[in-house]
Image (tube, rainbow, N blue to C red; front, side, top):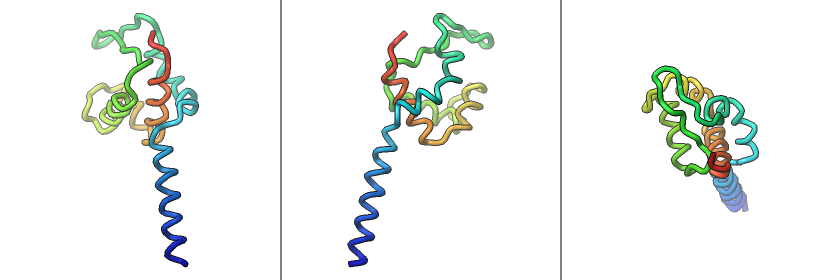
Length: 106
């Protein structure tokens, strides 16, 4: 009987972890305030180096998550984005990706 309990707990944990891996767009909306300071301004350009700041609304969630993880690890080089992403957990990234993927394109 104990073996069955262990299996049940493992299955419950896997289901919970799968649900969390998808990201919570409502939580992502709460986390996105900092992001919107650059990514939410129409026509915004970064000062140095000068380039157009991409809008994130409607982007693919997997792409957004992979990009944030690459900034966090240093595989993508942008000092501001690296500083922001270093503070994020995998769950934060999933939540932000879920939010922005469902946000309107602007």
